[in-house]
Length: 435
Image (cartoon, rainbow, N blue to C red; front, side, top):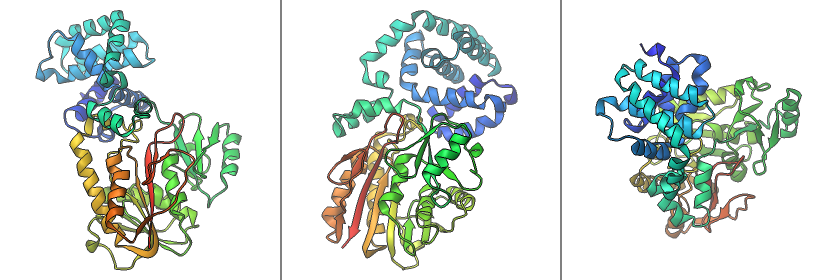
């Protein structure tokens, strides 16, 4: 049966995996995309990303439009309602196709008796669209499409920026490339792209960053298989720039998967440093190895937990350490909108505690005179500047290095970057030196 399901039916099932089973959208799409006709996969992805991105408004609309909650055995119909409302309220899909295909999915999911109900609700929204949508502006949650606990934290952390952060979290992120400086200069690769009629422009902050005007299959880019470039957000590219690795050094990338920063560090020194790529997840380490292989780079790949160096460390200190710690990923919500549905307030404090443990353990692996770059893709102070402030108050041999970026703001304990329209994601960096 499942091979015959249309995109709306598959999108509904994927959404239930996220909402009810708390699985990641990446995982859900990985499964359901295989059951989708290849030409329809972009639509499936668009429906899933859009429904997660606008979940708070479409869920509120569904409650308004339903006279009573759907029975538990009809959860798939509830998910189809989310998908249908997303299409009508937020997409450029024709209303005729949106309604007909979504209602037809009831039949495909063996719930034909709900076709009439779903059809009626979607057509009612079609008629009352403007008044229903205007009612959603009264609540920050439904207007800005983020959970209440998160908005509350943003208001506290960033009273002048919280609305901008939410607005950017609802946009589609641009496709950013990292030029491989071992392969060619950025200006040369821009000319190569231009010769292939691929419109692109250089980033404003990271020296290796290139933005494509339109997203594409990156494997079709000029000489991609020959290591000309990689996909990496511009904010993430600043890591190698700030850590400034040197040839011949011993460098640790402590939470390395999927390997973008590991590879960038090696590219920066022409593959002439001893880089240890560490990660706790064996499956994700395979991605690190794949990236190293494609780019023809060499690193020592180790499975292990950064907070337990006694299980993997050989005892030799590092000149530089990149500490891109596990975080809430609240700076990359626009790339992973399911974060809005999966992350909980209690997760943040637990993550901050883990980050502090990793930072303190990693510090013991750094040579005197060495440099450690603490990084997250979070925009919450408890994971970022608060962690650094607490650490500096405890360690007399730690000093916050001066750092000036052309984007973001100086918190006094590192630089906070916010997601930018047609630009980089949200990120945090603090550069520490060991006296």
